[in-house]
Image 1 (tube, rainbow, N blue to C red):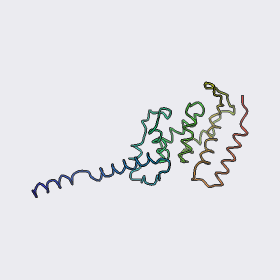
Image 2: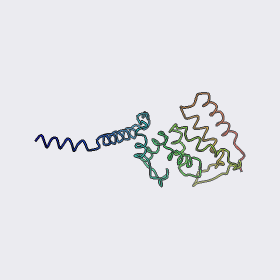
Image 3: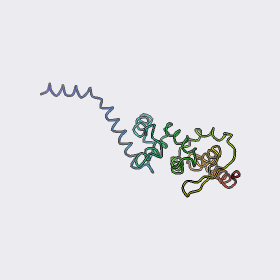
Image 4: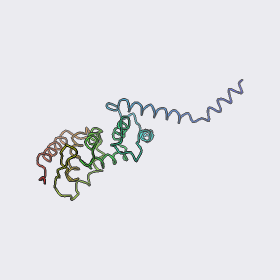
Length: 191
């Protein structure tokens, strides 16, 4: 019996228990983030497990935001808050498409709600596009709206991110709000 016990312990020692424990820990953290995504403390995602958490949450690369539903949208938001670069790039690009994207407003709010200013450098170059100042009227169904040039949309979006992100000082947020209001109340001419 002692020999069987010794062999059992020897075999157990060969099993990757730390990896199993780490996987359980990652799964538990992912579950907590999904359940409490609005008020989660994201500092529980330590640098050692960050990539594993992101890999569990990451959406298939081919999946567009408009195709996500339920849990996938929550995962998308968590990935934005964690600063997953792939997700931030996808969100920034989609958010810049503006009114061209049928779910733009929803995605736009997701990016703002994520509170992650890392998206700003990803869209900053778009502010310097030379794409005119013409705002074009558009209609989808019976809803009318205007499509602004991408450069103007980028400026507006950056100002909104600064206003919505707790990482900036109150003076910077006030500056962003003032300039965002000025952009919206003094828009370029409509054609």
